[in-house]
Image 1 (cartoon, helix red, strand yellow):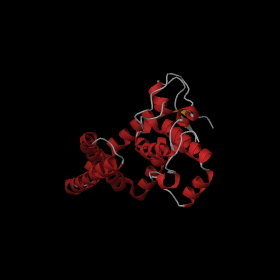
Image 2 (image 1 turned 30 degrees about the vertical axis):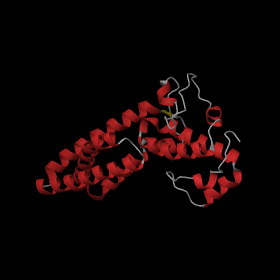
Image 3 (image 1 turned 90 degrees about the vertical axis):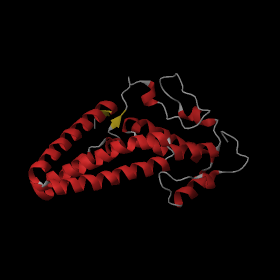
Image 4 (image 1 turned 180 degrees about the horizontal axis):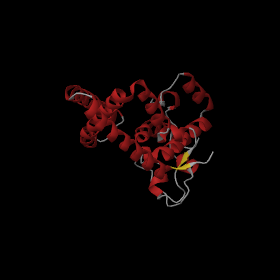
Length: 224
């Protein structure tokens, strides 16, 4: 199946969802009384704002950035909730089909199935791994050799980079690049410590878990 170009697809998908949300809000204003609309907006907005703060702080994002983004997420969450109520009032349970289509065509899902890739001529900052360690420096080469980049990191540094990279998955425009980097971390850990890697997987790790207790060997030497 032909792969979509990452950033272009993301922008088209976001514009389409924004248009659908706008129509949903208008529909809610027509079919639903103002009281329920306001109640849904306030409740959903508060929930979305609180969730964004909680996740942002747990992902070790800068506090100022987290709290600055909270009102935006609150407004977005409230607006989406009102739009869903509007579509539900207009078409009933068929709104669930619309939600499934939106979720199924979202960039993270499309990227997970391998149908989405970063454009070959995209700027280097769209393809390079996120800044996860103070000693990692951006490369000038068009194609990043992750194996060489990660060879000098200790096991503890690899584990820390893996954990911190989870926060970058929130940024849909960097999804494909971040997924590649996280896979490179896993490959490097498996190459160095195959037995410990199997034990870690057997423990049922989460995407944001800290695997250092499995790979921290004290006097660990990079590139082992």
